Length: 165
Image (cartoon, rainbow, N blue to C red; front, side, top):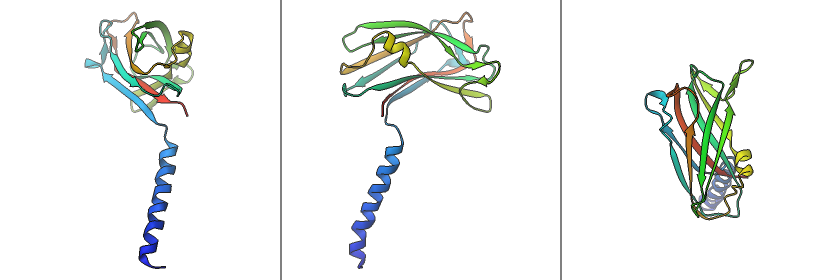
């Protein structure tokens, strides 16, 4: 076999390998988090996340990203989440998200004294009838409702939106 006939075969194999690698990772449509100054989340600081959807035939998973230090004082967090759709209709819900238990510790992934949680918001979104069936820009705003103000040892808050496989 000459070297010129091996080149297309090699290129074909690389395309197959890249497709296999790309097929193993979920397509992340949107992920953004914001750092909180001095690792304190003041109740009047309401992060806002805007993202645009074009494919209204797909279903999406939406997760909250919450990063905190081990010294965070609670095993949960109360949040008020508002979602504004492209037609400017706003849906708001309060939720209590579990971050850890006394028996098993923090439920998120950790490195040293930093823990990150990716918590699905699907149940809450479905209960409010939010289905992402309109093309356009969606806005999420997240407000902390904890008694401690500012809420100490919170590093980042964010949203992740990805197509369901």
